[in-house]
Length: 457
Image (cartoon, rainbow, N blue to C red):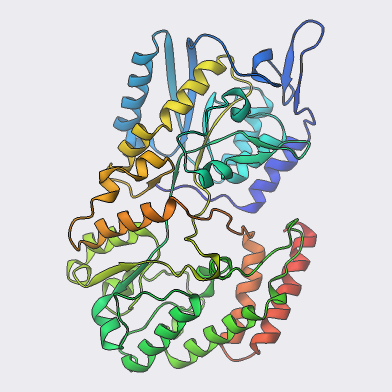
């Protein structure tokens, strides 16, 4: 299972298609009717006031590509909900999650047939909220925020047609970031595995030590900067985009050119495989072969190594990602659960959405051996499953480390379209190859990014 990452192109299709309805939310007419996104709905689904009504009726629940691996789990959640609320029925739809997901969701919304409860990501939630198709959960249940980590609840807010921030989603599950490394290779280079660097440049300094000690027999990390842009900039507190998101501003910070200078220096000195500069491969294979000192920053990578390379796993350590200027760990936006404002049984849909994402069910799913995900509720993160690390086992240590981070993590990551990110990466690659200075690469990267942003790319 993995969360599907939609392209900006499809997101734009969604926004344009939804904007065409131009309806949003409206109150009742003289006859007592109401609309949401152009669809006739119950008066209680829109406007101010807590949602009331009997929790009875049939609803649809839509996920993305989960039934194959987690059918038993979700069948159990549905059965438990129906037992707790006699007179309810939840029909589960599992969308394949292909690249037409957003456009199909748009079509369902415009036809007033969107699922009552639906798993969405941030781009889809943004488009559906703007057009008025999602229930304002924060208004309809003023206590909805209580179970969730505050930073994740904050991410569950999206602008409506007027620009007002509305809580139209519930945060569901998320990932995390940490350092993974081969302790033997670090020690050979004079790097102390027990003292992870606290800054990105400090991490780069450790990469350099590895390059000088390895003599080409192993490497520190992979070269392609696509893995680090804009994540490193965010962690360093470098502002990537203007406040309105319409222009790039990263070149205004001198540390950006310093970062590029470091990358070019490390590449030249052999800290990275030469053939990895434009490769899309992550460190998984080479790390498992003991040829790269630092592995993927994804916690699930630790389990991958455990399953595929026990000898390297025995030498694997995990550490805190450098907090740098950000001061806390970073965490991307989670996956969300939304309730359709067009639901004919909104009280049932809202009750099920909150049941699905409550601490008990989030914790239970995170314990499933088929998945490495993290919950968004405070109670879940405090569960012994995350907190009782077993000895020095790296995977257990990784779970606790990330769970502790997520309690205070920043979720304000910069989102770049693939086109803009690739334009920036291409210029950094030229600097790493020595064909352009770091200063020129950064300046040209910002100019090209701005051209694309003006085009809406």
